[in-house]
Length: 132
Image (cartoon, rainbow, N blue to C red):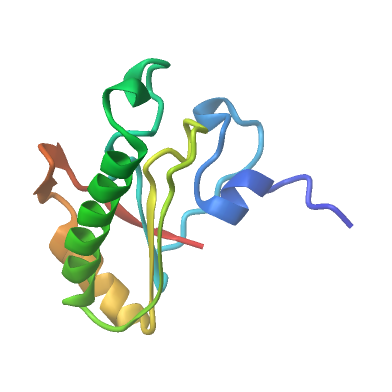
């Protein structure tokens, strides 16, 4: 039986392609082992504009991504053991640049969320929130 109350996009990814216009319920947990940082990765190749990817070669795009990944991954490791760490290089606006961090323990996720929210990365303020 399909759930008509909760948004299936938000339930799966913590982000909804319809945003505030969505007619379904978006559940935000008070605490969770998983953190979502929206649009944290803003490197080349995300196609905000159609011509953006033309300025970098595929190798340069991959190198920039790997530099971001190593930099950010090591920062999240400071708070505890990671089960999963994903960076979306998806062209869909609601997923583009999102970083998902799943910790082994909820306490580690809470510590990371408290420590990282409000800090700045690449001239943007980090807003970490719990995700399903």
